[in-house]
Each structure stands twice: as structure tokens, then as C-alpha cells.
Image (cartoon, rainbow, N blue to C red; front, side, top):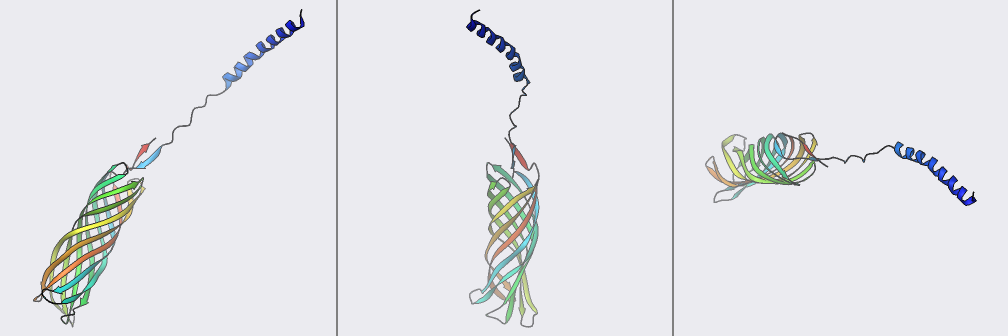
Length: 238
């Protein structure tokens, strides 16, 4: 037999013997699935919430005798504690809301009158805020601004040089408020935040012991807030 033909026949036989082994190796290899897609949780700020707050404030109060001289001014400072209830809805990263807040307060202070030999004292013992909110969320972090109406419970009193009361007056004052806050969702349905509010009360005439003063008042305060939101805290995104 021709040598070339013999070599070709031997090669064909060798390839035929190796083919089943190669097929067996290919069949034995396990099939590996692609890893599952990662799921990212996005905090959802939508829903009703209720919470508590506490902090401190200062009411700058100025007394002017109507048609006369300035008696003076003072800062009525102290603490406050209260609660809030509201609703938020989220569209993308924008968050909108409405909220009602009510607080007990003890913002008090006084000054000597520059006109009479008396001491003028003021105290805010309560306030309420009805506001709208607009904010921007980075997942579980929310930065927002707020504004709306404010109502304040005020008490004014005048003392003589010996410390005896000459008269007092109480009233409810309406005004406006603006503020801003930062809130962080730290657990399912729970968030904690800090907030600043300024209340514009303008001026009002108050008569005590036969003297009518035009009393101007504005309030600044800082609060720490804790909220519980009803509903799911997050949504899943693939």
C-alpha cells in the first residue's frame, strides 16, 4: 500500500477515536447562569406621617407708646415641645407636602421701660403652624422649604419698680411663617430631622394700665423632629 495512503488512514482512525472523548468533555461542562440583577431600594417619602418635636426659640419684642416714645425691646427666649401631622407625595426626586403643627412654649423676657419707671414683660405660651412644603430627596435624605400661616398665644404684663404687677393682657396673634428643614429616614417608616422656622407677627396695639403700646414681635426657633410614616418605607428598582 502506498505510504501516504497508509498515513492518511491511520490519521482518520485516530480522529475517530478522539471525537467521542471530546464530545463527552463538552457535554460534561456545567451550564452557568448569569448573576441576578442587583435590586436597589429607594426610600419613598409619600404618605401620612405623625411626629413629635422639641427645641428652643427667641421672640424679639419691641414696645412703643402709641403716639409717643419707644419704651424698649427684649428677646423672649425659652423652650418648646409639640407635635405635627402631615401628608407628603413624591414625584421623582421632588417631594410636596402639607402639615399642621401645634406646640406648647415658654418664650419669656422683659426690659426696663425707657419712658416709665416700669418693667415690660412678654411671654409666648403656645403656637401653631399650617404650612405647605416643597423638597428634594436624595433617596432617604430630604431637604425642604416650608411656608404658610402661624398663630401665637401671647401674654403681656407690666410691673412697677417694686415688682408688683400693674396689669396684663393676653391675645392670639396671627402671622406668617417660613422655614427649612433636613430630614433623614433612618429605619423602616421612621425619620429624624432638624428644622428652622421664622414667624412674622408684625405689630399690634395693646393697652395695659392705661397705656397703649404698639408691640412688634417676630420669632426664630430651631426644632428637632421625629416622624413615623404610615405605609411602605421604600420601593424596589431593578
